[in-house]
Image 1 (cartoon, helix red, strand yellow):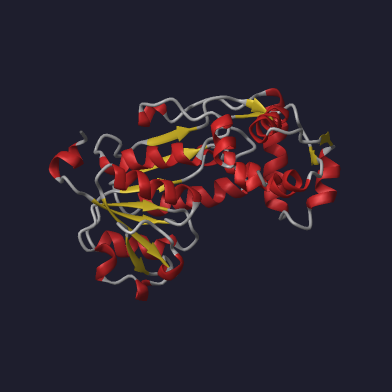
Image 2 (cartoon, rainbow, N blue to C red; image 1 turned 90 degrees about the vertical axis):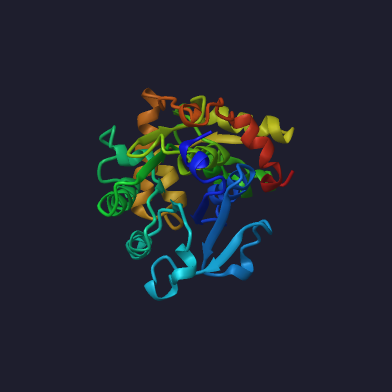
Length: 290
């Protein structure tokens, strides 16, 4: 049992981004761990969260919406990395909140030249600084690529159209959003991770072709796959993908062609092996029309 749980049998955790992929799993994990959960959202009527969750209305970027009811009794906060989060952080610190877990990105570590100045690095480094500049009670989670990014292929897979993608031999370690949520829950309910920056990935580096094959196995059917060049990808998708994101993706895939993602599963926090991509694919079969 963590020191927080020993001190307070029902800690209150405020979750921002509670209706997102990580947030929903975090809410259910915290409830299962016996925490009191409060969710902040601009549209409480659309939250569709478990009945045990106290849903409060508020805008992270609007101080006028962050009244006393948002932070009353809150022991810890999960910080979703949205722009303008400084307003929320100022209000939370002023209200006496002493623990923050930040959802960041492995790009913020700037381990590779491709990360420095990338869209993800610039955004998440700013989020991290916004927290660490205001409080010493922080933990930063830096997930690598999310398995949820594969949902970008849902139309092709659902319709039977071929996936056209570059760098099929490049290898990434996609992480299940549930692993991120369980790691976040542990850091929110324990004093043991204060001041730590924790990189986490999925448990295995798989080539992009192997990732598609994993999806195909989960769906029980073939998925047509065509390798195209980076220039072809840019030409076919530039109207949908902003240039900074385009550059970040192509640099990442190109680099991991020769240097696969280094595996750093969430086990270091959760004590459990990370969920393999096959489990994520099974969990998301409906998203691909199965």
